[in-house]
Length: 112
Image 1 (tube, rainbow, N blue to C red):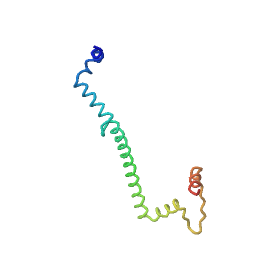
Image 2 (image 1 turned 90 degrees about the vertical axis):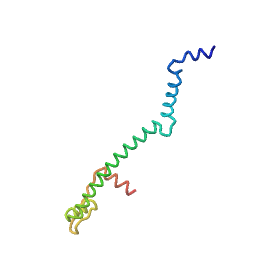
Image 3 (image 1 turned 135 degrees about the vertical axis):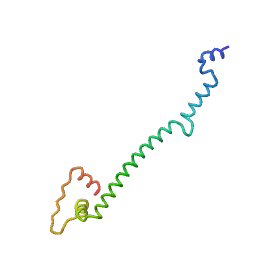
Image 4 (image 1 turned 120 degrees about the horizontal axis):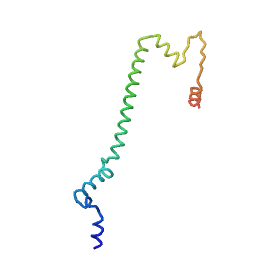
């Protein structure tokens, strides 16, 4: 009699074996399956991040290709690049380097 009282307290929808099977199946998919929804969500987030990274690096590659083409074809651009990036100078010139505080900190970290 006690058993029947407990079963009577369960809503009729949850006593149906088909609905109970569907509920167990959904819980299994959400939590325990190798392709569960939690893992799928994490993988989709990572996929989205990787696609953004691919777009970023593709644009950087294209910009570097254009810059390399400019350097290979124009001597003025090559000289400008060498002066700015590698601080090259002509023998009769003086070179003064003015750094911002952030650049100064970055150089100090590299040297230490």
